[in-house]
Length: 318
Ligand SMILES: Cc1ncc(COP(=O)(O)O)c(C=O)c1O
Image 1 (spheres, rainbow, N blue to C red):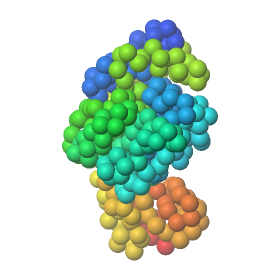
Image 2: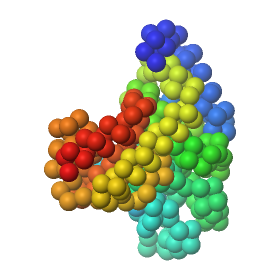
Image 3: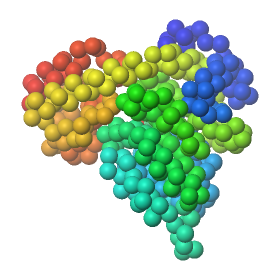
């Protein structure tokens, strides 16, 4: 990736003149089955652009509880788009289509519902996967109720590998999809918003409004193009590592919850921050989420025997 970055052909992407960014956008539009793609510095900025495109001021957005846009984008929907995100119950990150239909506002006393927001895989629910069948049922509710639909597909790659399906099959039917290149794919920077060609000029304008117009961004796009060469094998390995970790944790008497579906393993522990500090002291890094949850993420920079090494060290700590 570093070599590709050094050798990248570059230009001014504000004018659409960076050949490497253009190549990345064309590659992703084709891979995800959309007419157009736009490169962003972050997934958050691409998600916020989707809100600006689809949800009018003072409307509301229905999203699964725990969605990144609600939990981790710092009230940006309120600040930037002036919209309300309403989290809906979503066991394992999967909202019930009937409950979504019932949640849509129609009364003059309520904020009009404009957008259905889904997340695949769902980070906080455990890296859980939305399959095509449930996605179709949710999208048909959106169509029936005349809502736009956006997919936060930061980890659509992991969902595609877990379901053994092309990512385009999971992206079909949405008005826009955000995919990240900087997470499991391992590129240093960048996410892409997939959208119809007609929305591209407006999306470019919102990106510029937020300070996301970049020059010589081809150095970043070049790394992402390298990540796109071998993502299927890389993520399959990450998923196998996560399974091995989960099995090892269970043998150590740790509470894995839920069983991993992709590259994340969540544990329920007492004093999660203290537990993570003790792990870090032996060279195993994990993220405490609140007082009683810990998230482990497997990734492409781990050695082949990462699960064995980590489990041996965690056993010492226990
Ligand atoms: C599901 C999901 N969506 C969006 C984002 C935002 O991506 P970024 O960190 O590039 O802004 C993240 C980041 O972790 C995420 O997990």
